[in-house]
Length: 170
Image (cartoon, rainbow, N blue to C red; front, side):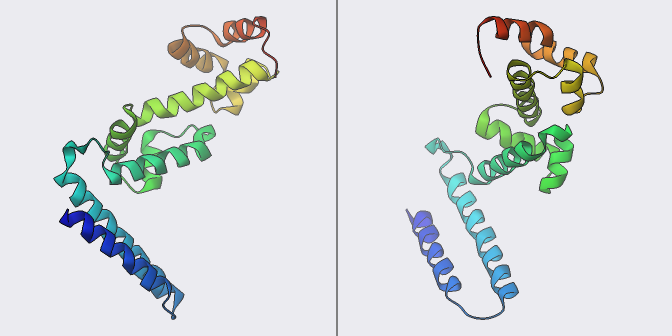
């Protein structure tokens, strides 16, 4: 359709710009502007074809940025607001993007990543639960225990024992 042809033609501008000689700062600014324009054209195309089953490209990009930032900073125990601020978006915008792309909230994604790390350390490490709680930014082992029990239905100690008794080795 016409919108897709416009997007494809617009991509040709990137090749032309890449071959230009001149000030790197100006060329970088031009590339950023073209990218923003391209994203807006994608958004227009997506809005015109919302029933095609594809996610909003802007939401997808933001969700990917959030996941990458989460992977780098989950040990700091940031809130959704902290991640949103770092990404330059409102907390609700980040949460909506995560829900649109993964079906879960940004908070649930943070909790899931922290929980994965807790399980990994319990199953494959030898540190005490207190040391794990300190490493992961929990105030003390009781906060870690409440978090873990809420998400897994058992204590960290019980998880460690059950995992070790299954014969899983580090």
